[in-house]
Image 1: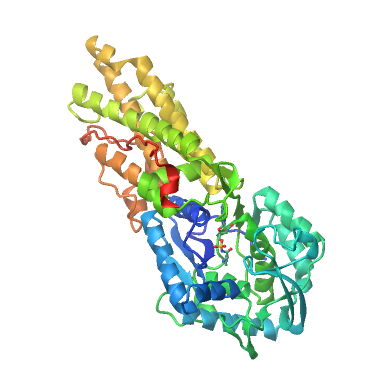
Image 2: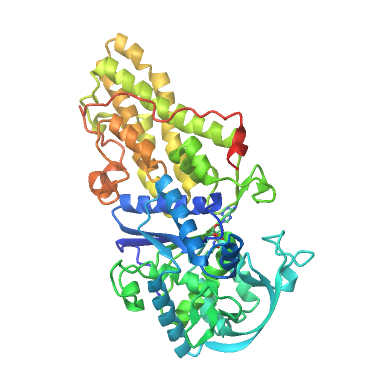
Length: 539
Ligand code: MSP
């Protein structure tokens, strides 16, 4: 089993490949923002990064949705896939690959993989009887169902009975190898609570599962029996592999796996954990391929404490949200306010608006603004002519800032976005307090030039460090802060960000160049107001 090489210089991260039964919702935006933040962080660190996202387009759910819209499945998928791409652009998601499972090159990969598993003797025919949830695209055990034979995840839909001859994958054969994988690689499934869920499930004994469908046309034909199509999940998971192909290389497994495999991180929601942490590694073991390094299952977002659902009419449209409040605001809220791995709530009036105003407009924005104004007044609009080394070692901001980069880096590595932002906020809040206490306006009047210089430098440098460390989450605000501090860094320039602002320099407190000319002070974040019409206008 492959062990983790912490020093390798590549980092491949995936979002789920989203179903195209509907336009993206806030759940898909949530995972994708997190994936983008981690990709940006790894780039800052100097890694060569591949961020993969895309769409999962086959199966009965999509077939039926297209039909209900009076469109051909292909036409329907093309339309919705564009909707995803547009949202990712609005959210400043810097994805490198957009994998569509209906792509011809994907068919080549699926065929070859199927053949390898077939040759291994891991596929056989048998009768599949059971209750199927089309929305989950998954068979359910009778005991998992709610009253009236409804799926717990889709309580407004009844499951459907299936009794058909299918091709099965020998999952049960991999029971002990999977158990060994979980033991040898305790970090494979995260967080711990999800790992426990998987261990419990596997402990009950694994059963083979069917990987073909008889009455679904919208899928790749089973290579050994074109009267059936391949089960959407068997096909979809391989979408991660297809995504690794260079755009013009021949679609073979060898080519796809040559550079980025094994994938470093699969980011997913908790509802699709079993597919990623049990079925997927077993499929890879069967094909003789190394297993990805990490699967992280995040929690679910509720709205005002309630499950989001179309029936309740409380779904959040991410496009409308970004339009109203801006990209960075949305990114910040979800990364800071919802502890990654746990469920969390979206509440526009009581949490979203107050938190953004407090953190970004008041704490961060005001700190920069007031300090830049003082620098203009007392120092000719330049960084004082001193360096970080000239600030005494016991300076509060220097003390907090000195190991902040390292602490935040560890938090990002662990996907603890809340912890990362909280640590950065500590420095920002200390900066505001420090100015109030030091009162540089008084020091200036008293002619204490050296002290004024130190206060200004310490605060400007703290805002810079905060902006740098927040850049994976709020790249546009960080750009603006850097610009006002006199840099011409662009955190959205993924090809050279680690050259123009390398982590080993910029993540340290005390690196703001002395005498650098500062820019015009301008608010970096406009205070938000709740629109009286509320969120209902866009639903
Ligand atoms: N197509 C499969 C994934 C295949 S990956 C090879 C799929 N797609 S999905 O569009 O239904 O779901 C995508 C992701 O959205 C999942 O990770 C799911 O957990 C997540 N979410 C759906 N609703 C959510 C919330 N309310 N909150 C947070 N994430 C949620 O499953």
